[in-house]
Amino acid sequence: MADSRQADKFVIRLPGGMRDRIGAAAVAQHTSMNSVIIQALESYLDGQEHQKILLEALSEKLERLEEA
Image: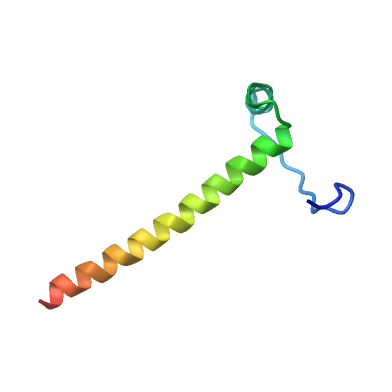
């Protein structure tokens, strides 16, 4: 993992209460708030990619059914 001084940084404004929710999740998981946020972003992005693949497969299947 990169040294935190060399890692990409991004400032974000959170809606009210979200910082507390992230903090509580970090305490429950015995990790940092940063780790919780990174895990959530990775999960979301992986899910988006998975959804894209499924939709493309469904679209191809529908095209084949319409041709038949």
